[in-house]
Length: 146
Image (cartoon, rainbow, N blue to C red; front, side, top):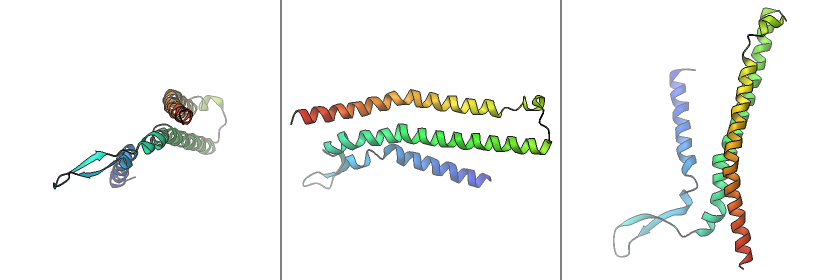
């Protein structure tokens, strides 16, 4: 990978993250013009339905589902590539002795990736369950009051 490609990929990732982190706020803001004045403000809209019904799900997907999915897919691809490289190395050296394969760190890397992914999922899931539970509690309370 060249330096130019790395810069383009990095800037693209930053741009996606900037848009991605504010996507739930875009529909909740709008322009308000002060009557009899050229002044225009960007203010929150009174769209309670959007804020209370849609935003928790967007937050759940943005902060829990998407990162967890990306992490799991990336780890599976890395582990798969490590196994392929291990097979290639065995074919190139044409030995099957255990002494040479003991120094191979691919298994340790795979275990580390699985541990990091599991830790991430276990530490972020309570936050998501809290927000979804809060949303479901809101639904139950709003249907009971009607």
